[in-house]
Image (cartoon, rainbow over all chains, first blue to last red; front, top):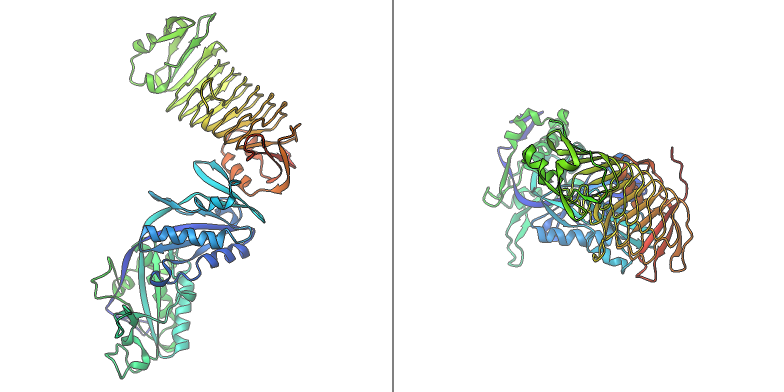
Length: 307
Length: 273
């Protein structure tokens, strides 16, 4: 399968069941909402080292937020409910409670509720006040800039993490340009985040290592400088590979984001050095979800124009 | 189906307890069964059709016509449906109401919304003392739901109130929010003496600074963001409170004679139609 001279590999991305939540961060203006949300979703690229994968889903206008202020929606994913709850509370305490004018609200309904500000209230040392409006409980915690407002809980849903595709190009700048174009298109898709820096990751990994202490190590088959040393997956003309990882609330959201991202990358085409699109998997044995690239790219109902 | 209507046909000398006439208790009953429902009238019992002319058949929408202040416990324990009262209502209106809504096109006696836990009570006239308060022997008053009063309210409004919202467009008597445990009371008119006496937690929202006793302390003027959440939740209500959209208040805290984490918020600028 070729799109604009770019080969789409007959392979699939392998993704996993995760637990996810959405939190709405509001502040005096978007500048401070982003300060809070960027801090909250910082160091949240991979569950392996960070506990959660988190990112900013989109900007919210004043009409879209519970308190009528400017805001952003944050999505957060983890492998289990306990770690999601722990990470959410830690990050709330260190980045939202601390950020001037910031407030946090539940951004998703769900059968299961997890603590948002429920335990942060104790920072109020007895001066905290609970208020219940429209069936939702909020906490007002007195802080030095006024009052910190947070909803008590947020919803937790079953989600999907680890959707991905690889961009193979003839040079590093060209691979990055294609990934940037893909991310720009994918950011418009609701219910997904691309958790790595700028949405792009270069250190794709394989399972196992020559060192006993490590359970994952560099994906040598896709490392361009090792072409002559290992069982390489790269042809002579490939000099750089980058990956985009996608976490979403449902597998349909990830399919949509995958389509839109690959479509945008392929738009640059072979003349801009984009040669192949591939995906990372573990042979289909570990993940509960498989995203077959060719099947997705043949499904025109996922096209970016229908966003 | 038309609303099941109870039109008072008797000049009541005693108090009449209509707590058996609620939608969930009347559901699936035949007209004859409804007519024979026994109601306490003073120390005797009356059949419902001795006191009321009964018309209509929709037990989920009850109407009390020509109602007077002698009729107690209207909408008591209401779990579902709508109750409309045309005329006045007696004591214990909406007693331990859980869900549904009650509209009174008239005035209401004491202990309205006592023990109320949910739903919407709209009173288009005045209301007596102990609105949303605990009955004698209980330690907590209203526990949830929303009460709107278009007119004035009497003394001890919200006494020992635990949760929920009471919005009063008129004036309120003495001891407003006394011994309040939590929840929200809003008053657009004036309040009487000893406002917030023994207040433990909760919010009392006013439009004018009242005379405050020494154990309620000024905490200064602030812009409180939670008020926008609160006023947004009022936006669907048929009340002047739905028009408020400003969050600048002077905050008084107290009663420091009793824990002191209650608050009296006085809106600084208010222009209502």
